[in-house]
Image (tube, rainbow, N blue to C red; front, side, top):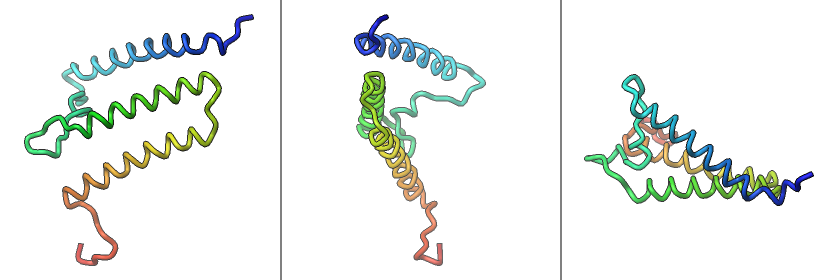
Amino acid sequence: MTDLKALSPAFVIVAGVFLLVVGIFVLARAHFSKSSEVDLAYLLVDGSLKPPRVTLGKGVGLGAFLASTWVLVLYAVQGLVDSAMFLAYIGGWGAVKAYADVTALKERGMVNRVDDPDK
């Protein structure tokens, strides 16, 4: 019987490339479909800026997400992920998303503050 831990780095690379190709195919079909509202430019373009443009923050955020997800998958295949690491990953990216949403709402003036009864 083959030792799975010896195959794990090669398996992660093959599975990762396969999932990347499938993901790109699905996103490209959605992006180019006239009936879909998916626009891949919003992965890097900050739409709140006038005019909308690519920002360093969006690029770094996307790169950090992809890199951390790849490392988590690699560690999981090697059996090195415990519940604390997984919760840190989920909590970290959940906090980033929540912060980005609250910041965007504040910029648009759509946040209702508890300490200000007039808003």
